[in-house]
Image 1: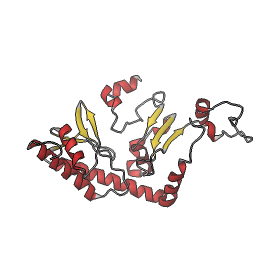
Image 2 (image 1 turned 45 degrees about the horizontal axis):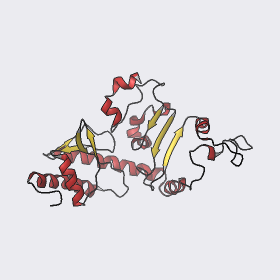
Image 3 (image 1 turned 90 degrees about the vertical axis):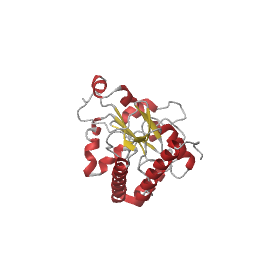
Image 4 (image 1 turned 180 degrees about the vertical axis):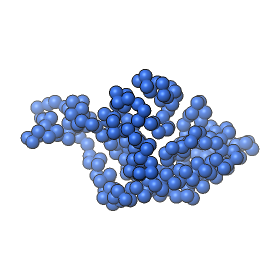
Length: 240
């Protein structure tokens, strides 16, 4: 923890929107990694640096419903040793299966926190079969390109400001009166974009991960924020 405390501010540690460089951290620090958005950047040679060192973690968690575009309720956990999961989640009862089968393999039911669950992996399996590695790489590359395009458009807009230099497909930016502007953008209903806080300032936090997202949607987002800002500065309510 000393290495983390030294490298990251408390606010950054609790509101982690950037990519963490794992390589400088000692192995005893890299225990659990949350790779909700950025983990799959490792599929692209041009972006592999973003996840260098992640293989040193004892466990890595990510969400297939984000960048892999499958329905919700599709979390993924990678563990270095499956026995860790078995020791944590095994449920003991006479009517439940043993920890291992006859071939001494760990029984899947003892690797997760639920005894009864549907086949959550099926939508992901279907997506992987439909797109394949090449299709997903093309999807990731397009998302990176759109994120860079969004960053350029924000930089060129006189009333918008990037919050740091985006390294992944998450592009946080802000405007004046951002809380009011965010409410107006939501009320208008033309685009949907989440918000976060950085140094106590409300920021927009778009994440470019959708397989249907195209350049016109990036343009629409910037236009909606600029339009909402102009109306907010002119006065009136968020529903005007």
